Image 1: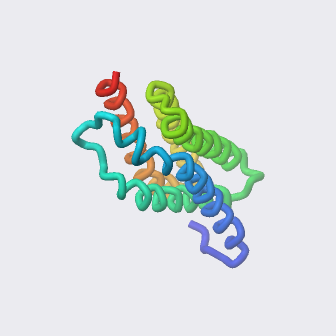
Image 2: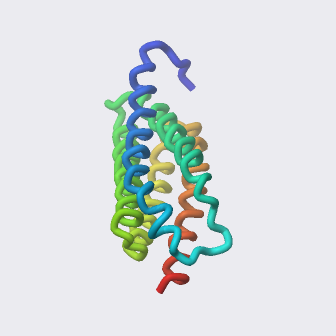
Length: 162
């Protein structure tokens, strides 16, 4: 692994800022319906408490940014880096849109299909990142784990709220 240098700082900060910004904007879409529409849904027994989502997602967005940085710093001229960053960008867009589909538009089935696609894109991103930085992949394990839980929760909401 390359040693972190002061020249890496702009890429490091940009990577983390990008992911946190996506999370912040997604959080705006989410916050207005947590105590209204979402609160009224029938939820499965494994639903995490509402207070947990903010801290977990903040940590996950920071980890996503670190992972992106570790790949990006290897050089955008590298085709493996470009492919990895492209897959990362697609999954980040899916992540962003999911919050709006689910919380803003209350589309449980549509958001389920999107989170399924998100899970696939995270997995494919991890495969692409593996070719560049194995550490970047391990840093994404908590993210895909949380999205797996969210996928199961989203599916359960379909079943419990016909």
